[in-house]
Length: 94
Image 1 (cartoon, rainbow, N blue to C red):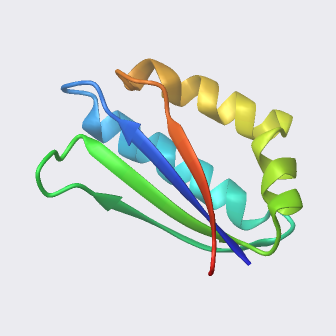
Image 2 (image 1 turned 90 degrees about the vertical axis):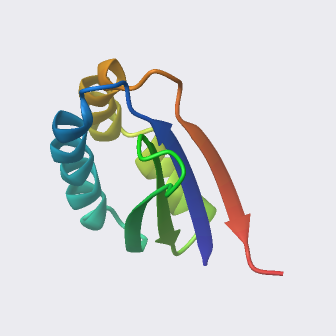
C-alpha cells in the first residue's frame, strides 16, 4: 500500500466552490481500481491550505488514476480555484 499526499492552496473567497469540486474528485477516485480510502484535512494555521491523504493499493494504481482523462478533466475545473499548483508526495511505509 502507498499513501498519496496532495496539497492544495485555495484562492481567497473560493472555498465553498472548491469544497464542492474537491469532494467530486474524491468521489470519483473511490471507483478507481486500487483506491482504498482517502480523507481531506484543513491546516489549522491556514484554512485555505488543504491536504488530501489517499491510500492506494500500488503506485501503478495511483499512476493510472493520476494520468487518467477523468482526473485531468476534474482537475481542470479545480485549478482556477487554487492560487498555487498542487503538490503531490507519494509515501510508503518504512
